[in-house]
Image (cartoon, rainbow, N blue to C red):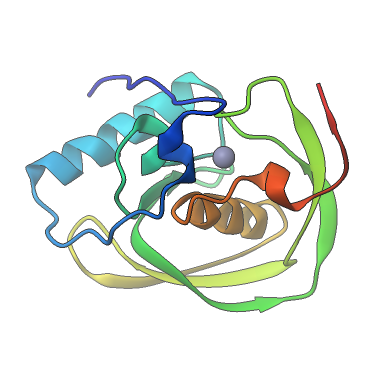
Length: 150
Ligand code: ZN
């Protein structure tokens, strides 16, 4: 268990399309542990692997309902749309309004390699979409409606 350095600003890792995780080995499990530690330490609700410089499709989320670890996540379904304020650990001190689905359903693998589905509304739907965007090099500021507030 350890903290990893969160990549910020113009770091090129934040703009890459990440590769699928092929094998859930000890390196991947350590990465997931470190990502959760790093997220909690930074008071975030989500963190994607490229934010710690690893270009693989893995994210961790905790919106206050417990830790969710997602490997190779894919959005299956969304419903509705909500505009709300959003921030990102890789863009410290900034927020902007982003329109996201009100509901999202995602499939992924868990750390045991089992297929799981995770669904959520509100902040959970927002976090799922935000973190999965990171895996494709997309930042919320790309989708901001209106000004980015510092
Ligand atoms: Zn982010």
